[in-house]
Image (cartoon, rainbow, N blue to C red; front, top):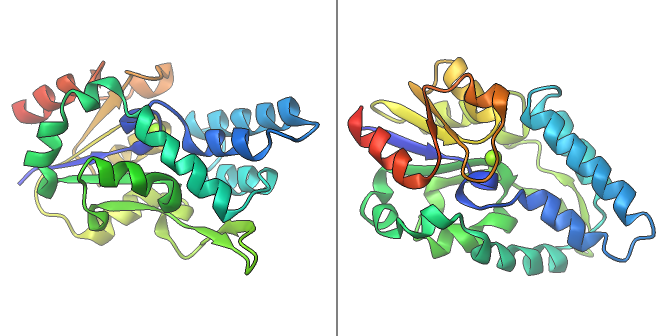
Length: 220
Ligand SMILES: [Mg+2]
């Protein structure tokens, strides 16, 4: 009855998807370096817990001026960015898909092509939603989603009403917060792509790759 909750950015895939969208969206902007640097530092502030996730999200979206076409284009590229050890364990995803959930502060439009490829049903993928205007211009974030708000991951997991022990795996502070809030029983810090000292310090277990996640998950 155990459930495995997996983060997306820098865990299931090697990259931060919103940063990649920004790179593409701003590629012809005269202030490319400056704006990108600002976006990455906001991401990092959120990841280490210096600012709240909703603040990090709205500040970044405001800096990325793009449209639905670019979003779809960039989303296709993440299928090539799946973490190496995740690719090596595709069979595990197929066999255990009933007990696996992807919960991310990222966006449906950016991640669905990749989770589809991994064979994870969309009902098991909880993510934020972009808001576009009638011309397809990105204007913001759907604030009705639990994930767009403070303690989003914890509240979203609670809303799923899962039975049994919950193990959450991720690289960021928001993943640890789920364990801290008591919604998850264990937190695995995932360091294959990024190592964050303050996150790893709080973990029940530090996994260097997905094989170690499986080993730990099966052992508890
Ligand atoms: Mg992450």
